Amino acid sequence: MITVTRLFFQRITADWNYQYQVWRTGVDWIVALYIVIPFSAGFIYYYLSWWRAVPGWLDYIPLNALSAIIVIFAWSGTIRIFVEGADQLFLLQRKVWISRIIKYSLVYAVVYNLVVTLVLLTILVPLLLLHYGFSLLGVVWLTVLVFLLKNCLGLGKQLVELRFKGWAKRIVKLIIFLVTGVYVSQSVALLLSFNGLFYLSILILLIILSKLLYKRAKLKGIFFEDVAREETAKLRLAKYMLQNAGTYVKRPRFSRKRPLLFRSSNLLFKKRNPVNALVEMCLKYELRNEKDVEFYLKMVGVSILAILVFPPDYGWLLWIVFSIMISNVVWLFWQEVIKDPFISLFPWLPESKIAAMSKAIFLMALPGQLILGVVVAAKTQSWFGALVMVPFIVLIGYYIAKKISLKS
Image 1 (spheres, rainbow, N blue to C red):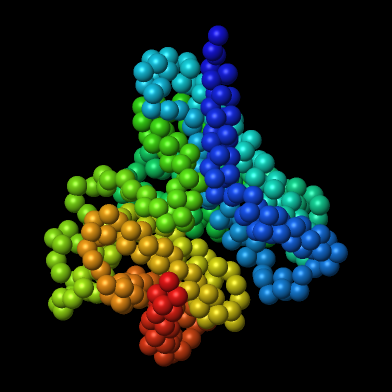
Image 2 (image 1 turned 180 degrees about the vertical axis):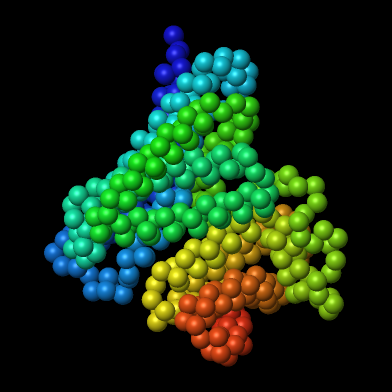
């Protein structure tokens, strides 16, 4: 006889088996032999070398960079609730079953976050002990901090997504992200100084986690939102592999009746030619897609955080690194656009596609590059230098876009 506990573990087993099958589809024995195994062996070798001697490159990475890693790690991922669309035919009528599946899912998420947190801290522990001056007890407390924070953020983001929609949701999440960055930076400093306020912050975080778990377990009327989120989480790895294999993955329809930007579909370029037409379609396609805009803003936000935590001397070097990253991410956006079935209907000439790619990447990456330039100027307090750098930012951005398009 099937029970709710057996049903939940069947779904967990089926999900792990599905992810393994997807992974095995993309990683055959040739890839494993020539890429996965050598990479794993090299990582183990370097990891063991960290215990013997501290890497010299750590001298250029401040402690605040560790805080940035913790924030990004804690922010990543989601809390999965293992419900399916077909449950509305049977389980949705049995409130006790649905309630227990939600509770089991929350327990599973907490255990999963504990495991991945232990993996991360195990990788970082030689650097923490030998370079950053943490004690073994300090590493344990840091693990507790990261574990609690990851669970709180996972639940908090989910509750925000259920409470807010559109740009209000993005603004609230951005505020939470920035506050989390400040909190982690201060908590790490308190931990190193053995300040009693650190233990108080851990206690507060534990209380917040218990409140969030209780509220999420008792939340009603969000069955279909949980189903949609679970389907997205389950298919994330498969979607990533399909996109990297060059397969077009259909995007979900927009829930907004009218797009936020370019509502009237006015022409962006007065001169009409195939290059401008393709660039215009790319810009409208991406700027009307909230997911890509959100990802773009997140990437710029993370870049700003990294620039702020590193010493001012590294400002413009980091700007170049992050500018290249932004351009490469925009190139991925371009690849999605050019593979769209509608756009593929038109017989674009190769030279037109290359010129349009370069122009589109330059225009989409430029706002983020300019924002990062302003942050670097504010950090270094050299506004005159920033004004001089503006034309260079534009030229470097154009050069990066040109190189990426020619390489592609």
